[in-house]
Length: 325
Image 1 (tube, rainbow, N blue to C red):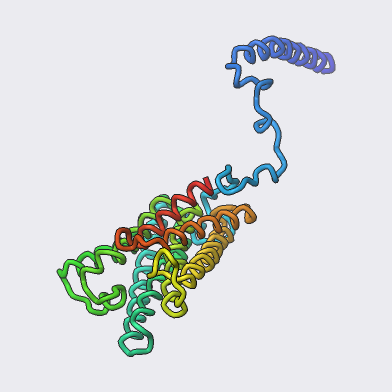
Image 2: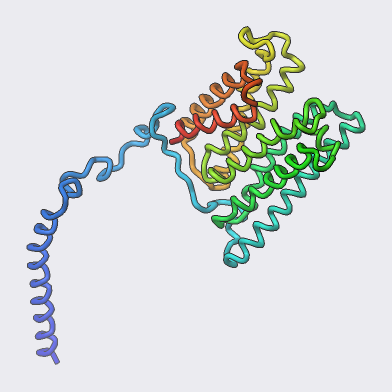
């Protein structure tokens, strides 16, 4: 038995020797056949070593270390997708129905309050403007982790879009809807600002969803920033901006501050749920930049040509895309 073991060990040693000898010849030859930019000796330092964290902190339009996460890490109902695609569809369909019911309840509540003279009509309209978009965005985590979840969520503003078109064209009448979302109570107004508003909600959900800060910031600026600017400007806007007498310093300042705070708050909300990770020092700087530029655009005398529900979110979207890369 000992002689057999000795022969087997000798055989193993001989085999390993042949393998090592072959590798010593093949590896250098194979490496020399690689393209020059793929050889280890020519790799850049960023691919071969990890730099200090501070080198990733650029300013504004420099590369940003934002990282999206495909699935919630700490929370979010996407984790319950263990029952498969059928479970995802059921979850998303249920979430869609729930959010539609919530949106209808929100509008109906403010209709009731304004009809009872418990709240001013214009204030009711602006509160619907602020809350409906933010609550729609806040509902995104209840949808599944399926790739179709964003389209299910988009059904909510799409339903409202169809409703606005039907009543805006006077194919049906809903006085409560007209009073709650229009300035002058005219049906055709539904086809302007309110319609643009829901189209931006659809665009942000489909293109960016909850894995990107871009859609979150653009909706926060449109709903929180622009909505608050009108409320504050009407009450405290006695001092007008020199180049636009329809806008006030109080309204613009409130838009900048509240737009910034709402954006940061919503980013923290999705970051806490694990949808993306942010470098918060750079994030605060970049959100401030987006808020400042969006405020400047909102203050320009272009409302007659471009509605604020188009200019503010689209400018915010473009700047956020550049800033967060």
